[in-house]
Image (cartoon, rainbow, N blue to C red; front, side):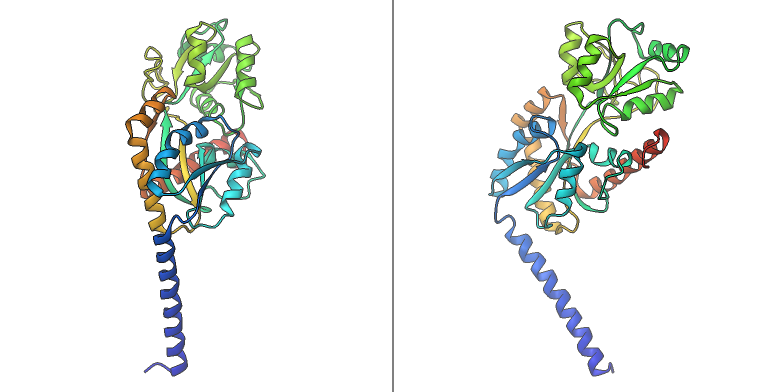
Length: 327
């Protein structure tokens, strides 16, 4: 028979555990009981804002509380992401951002969080069909094969625009260089607009840029699109092949948009948020808005999203090691 003191300790511990479980269950049942803040770690007007603008009314109706965007830009996304990681994990503060969540940390020594361990992974909400590889029309390359051949014949002469290490303009360029053994100079820019301006003026040779940004310039003949980085062609430019079709087997880089809570969020809260997002991205009017942005809704489950994020972080670490980041 257990010693009385030990028995009391066991019973006391069990009572505390039961109390904590009951408190979490009650909190989940009461969720949400106030407005929900969605932290976007980038300036207003970018893709995350546009996606949230499309689905926020649906989420507000489903959850019964206002879903409000809170832009906290700075540090390439680090400021807002670090802020969210420190918030209570009760479901009233969300993080909504791009693949930069896993891609930027290997290239920045100021990261104060782990993109996998310090967050509850709720859902992959949307993704694009990849970036468009565009070149200035004056470049002597009308295809990916010709571009690679030119880069091999003149190593170090060609340049590509890098709108930030770990961004969607940087990762596919470095992956292409690694897969083809080419030497193409990375030219850093503070953002996409500045990089696009230099490409249009002919000061740089190539750029991996969002399809919607590329489309207008390609249609006007100001840029030439050589490929799409995803595994499927985009219907906005159906004549443009994928990188895989252009000869780079296994090349599949898309920009995706995910939703996180701070680590330790109750699973019932996570499931309710996921269900609201999944229903929202299936709505016909939301799908139509996504279509104009070159996006598709996904709504990956939490159980699938967590390993997906871990795998994306691993890939980013490998690329970081290859190009001299922190990975």
